Amino acid sequence: MGTWSAAIFGNDTSCDTKDEFFKRYNNGEEPEDIKNDLLPAEDDDDRYDVLFSLAYCLWEVGGLKDDFLAEVKEAVLSGKDIEIARELGADDKFINKRITNLAEFLEKISVKKEKPKKRVAPPVPVESKYKNGAVMAFKYEDGMWGAVIAIDGHFFDKETIYCYIQTTVKTSEKPTMDDVRKSYVIDRNFHNRERNSLPFREPMFYYAFDNCITQYLTARATKKFETYNDSFFEIIGQLSDWGACSGGICKAFDYSVKTAEEFKTYAAWILTNAYNKGIFAHTDMTVDEIDKEFIERLSR
Image (cartoon, rainbow, N blue to C red; front, side, top):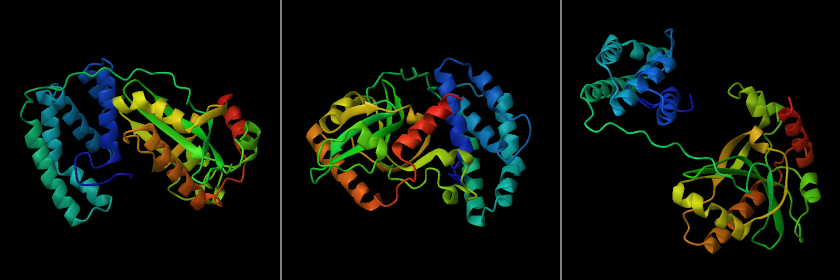
């Protein structure tokens, strides 16, 4: 598991269930329909995590019915969730904490919530020139030019999830797209057979860049997003949609700085350090070779 603690939402399954529930709830679906769709038809190791997560979500929106509450109560009192935790290797400390958390959870959802959570309008997609595949030139702290590529970005009115990878480009003059296409990505993980043959790596990670720099922006910061970027980056071209790869967060820009000039200084510092530490750990494939592969994948 990526996340595992004794809390009700201390595991990936519970968190994913909650995210999916409220995504569909905010899109107008009825709570009971969402519950019926998400609840596993058969018993498995994840059933109780889903069950408890749905019970909490229904309680939050004022839709927890007595029959489902009774089912949750029976699940807690039966101890089957605890049995599964033991089978998965949980120690006594975890078990005792889980028992306490389940008792408190059951007590909480047994009392109807006074002010149920209302639907929230989902984020509206917006256009951005910094879309996936955008190639951006910038200056390092020493005045030399570098280049990054936007990947896996999601742009909405209320939030922006922005991600990019750094190339080996470092030139005295502003780089061209030809310079970028001949360069490499500072990340060994893309097409790294040794890395991607490890037991915990899923096949999708064969197309992954793990050394990504990213930032999650809230509504206010999203409005300033392009202004900040314009002060430091210059778009010099466009590759194919590199959103078709997975990205692992390594570093993050701080968009909470007060001025674009502060952001410019901070971004140059982040990228300079990332370049100095990672320049020798780059892909075997050039940017051009990677781009052609993504184009081929998208055309399938």
